[in-house]
Image 1 (spheres, each protein chain N blue to C red):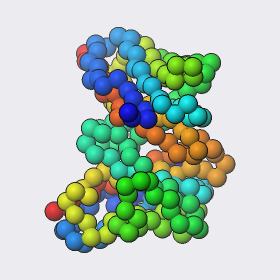
Image 2 (cartoon, one colour; image 1 turned 90 degrees about the horizontal axis):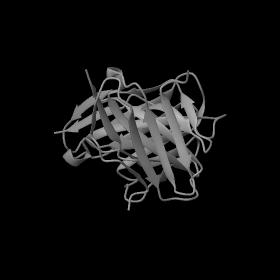
Image 3 (cartoon, chains in turn yellow, brown; image 1 turned 60 degrees about the vertical axis):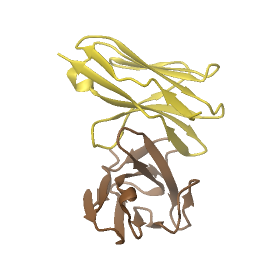
Length: 108
Length: 116
């Protein structure tokens, strides 16, 4: 079993749609969690950190459920520019473990 | 913001040759740098953790004699792929963690290596 598992995707949604990505992690000792965005043939860029209380940044909302070892990312009012691969990341002992990513394509 | 550069961005080499990739933190000091490789449509796989002034820590299955890592200063780490083979062709990405940060890491733009 992979340490970080994500929805396989791909997600193809129209502009303006709301889309949710899920991620589970197996290491209960993981300390921090993040969502990164990666565009094709580019490096990952931090989208947001994920906190137990949930956090929101504009159209993006991230949630962490430690009991279920589950992380989610919600994107509201999708834009064409949101098309990318979204990587779920857990951090433990200073090392980051990445999920395989979920590809999102937002269409006009 | 924190910027990490990598050089070269793209390299094509012949089988059997060695290739050196540089990772630099441009506006901050990084005691720890990480080297990842990424195959198409797959996620980043951590190869090794590089700490300034000490030996790198390699992940299981990564040959330390093949992937030589040097972290000689707080702003520079190098990865040398020795005796490269076509199966070493991949996207290599480094990241750096600020001295003052526990969690956040900043990624370089990556180096695409093609071994012919």
